[in-house]
Length: 569
Image 1 (cartoon, rainbow, N blue to C red):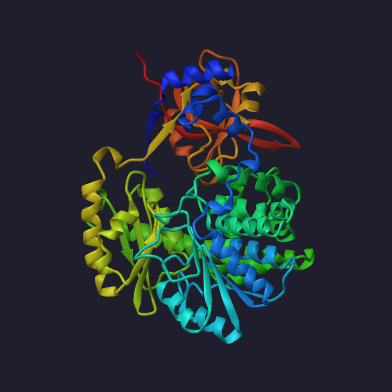
Image 2 (tube, one colour; image 1 turned 30 degrees about the horizontal axis):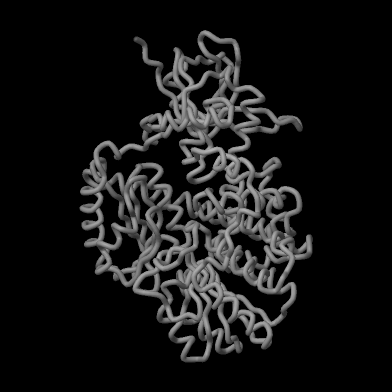
């Protein structure tokens, strides 16, 4: 793993001082607020006191009135409604949310999730044929559809209407749907642009509830699914997403739906669960359904009302996830070996690898692993339906989607955003794509960005970490993208002699300041070798704080991000 560069996040000191005067809390926490763009008393109040009353009116979203009007017509006319979603966590939770909401008062419903291998991402033509064959006259596409021009046009020829609920960037205009709900469309005035696909589905449910004077409590029951989608789709946990995640986690930890309860019982993590537990615990199990099988199994589980069947279904997903991990690790080893076998791999700015043997459902994970290991934008491609199909992941400062736009003449199709994307191309274009992508990366990735950057919020001493400190820091949760768990920098610490290596290159820590008495324990995942290099003298540690459960009690511990020798003057 490449050692990161440590950087103290630049902070507006005048804003920090003004906020301290307004709030009267520890200046350190005023600094953390300003780093999050919070500079007034009112903004701080909203941040520290999330409220469902602060959610935006769903009718501010372009086409929402059209969507509600068409959906209401379908409900009153007993039309068959088909819910269509992507095969990942966001797509499966989206379909489950809309089905759970509508099935409370309507029965003529069906859902469809595409086969990852045979149909790929987006609204497939096969699904439109399925809608026609089963008599559906309205399709609600969720977490996809904003680029489904051909599928929507075919459906219109069959007399089938579409409502699109998507959060990806439109391309080539908008499809001919009755309503295109997408805050990222250029003409949409909706104030918050970063909702997940499931978040868009929630806003549609919220709008229909307002239209029909349905009590707010009935849609609040859906928030656990929204929280899972926000966490696992790695969207910013700011603004409306932060409110939805806050209340969704509360529901998940206190009264989860049966399907999520069954999954939670399988991941063996102490309560309360946080965003990272959803990302690394629940997410892989839900994703496993579509990666190595049928994504509808995940929806069935999320909609389950019977505990015994839910436990059985969760067990199936656990087994699929084990199989996924075996394939994943083997692919990752092959990809790393193939890349480092290339002449001059150290100086390359990007990674593009193709193998027809690689599993289509795992290439996204492999791309993430390559980016993490080498800190380079990575594209992993395999063979499917007589074409090369790829998944890409980026590094900070490199806009992946913009780079792919410069290669679009080589693709059949592509889509995504700045950090993650996918594409399909003729196999014979892979080599040309690799050369052009490398050229773009060389132009855009500066020498200082060839190693990862560790953003540090502030320098502190271990003695600063008191119960009051923790209580205030807890109010910054839930943590996630754009509201990260703060990384702190403690200088001049030493090993107490009680630190010990664990399996898989992890390290159990016990440290104190060289001139201090307070001892803190913690963990460093994958950092045992790095610790070995510094443990014999004074060193600096970059870390964030986490709560661990020990014999039924909660204790505060460190999670190390990196170590380095303390500089001496």
